[in-house]
Image 1 (tube, rainbow, N blue to C red):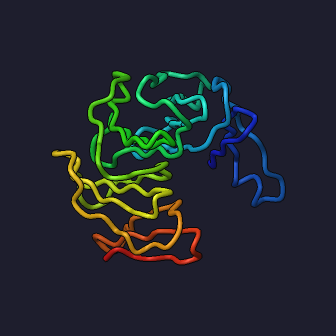
Image 2: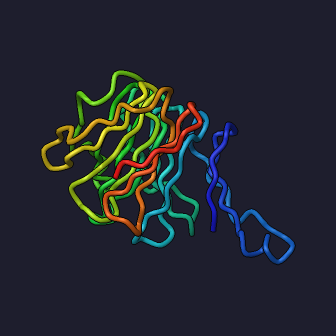
Length: 194
């Protein structure tokens, strides 16, 4: 299954297997946001659970089987949410980033912010990713041309990459090489942080 978000304020779930067989179909449409859906993430351990972030400054946690919102996470961000990521180590832990410059760690089951990471970025934060190998590491990217690696426990900046010459919009940890982080930027470079 594939999930997409759009300017129609909806999350769409797609059956890609049907597409490969010559058809392709929408399995379900999830409605509830009041602005564009900018990011989606399936839960790594809970089948049928997905999180979506929106321009309405909320995160919705969905049950994809029923199509219902199970939690609305609000009040943490004041601008467009640009990235959400589930922790592979703590089932309720969800990280989010926003155009308001904030990086938050939520307890999605309780709907509360557990931690606010500060001092890493000076502009819109564009993406977030948990390390697949280290439960204490989180990375974020920003329009400020930086990538920040955070210590989740202490909330401090562990390392700040400043090599990008333009806005950084995407990051991804390697699941095969511990500590390897790829970034994508408007400067048309892909860098690794190993």
